Length: 125
Image 1: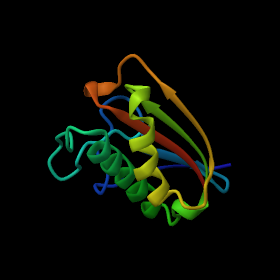
Image 2: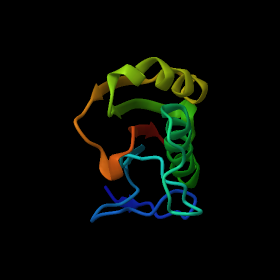
Image 3: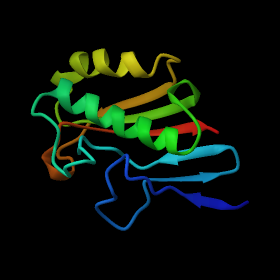
Image 4: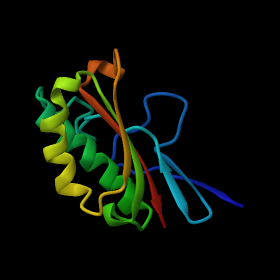
């Protein structure tokens, strides 16, 4: 099967040796998206609500660049810097991931650039 690597300026460029996403067959695997505004390269906001919105927007841009959408996401993995942000994160998450894909959500010690959240997704193409 052929691999297709995503590069879109509608989402932040990779900050390491990886791709924004890779598709194989009829599945798309996104890299974790942190709340970097692709227009400025800066972290968007200081609250979990603001940062969750931007992380979700970045996932959405990668999905759109590959001709798919939030409705076709089958699995997400979400990383939070503080599980105390779980409820506020869920409020933003539920607005976009309306199909209710399978999900794991864990608290981690530190995220890149000390952001509050990161989201990765697997979607059907």
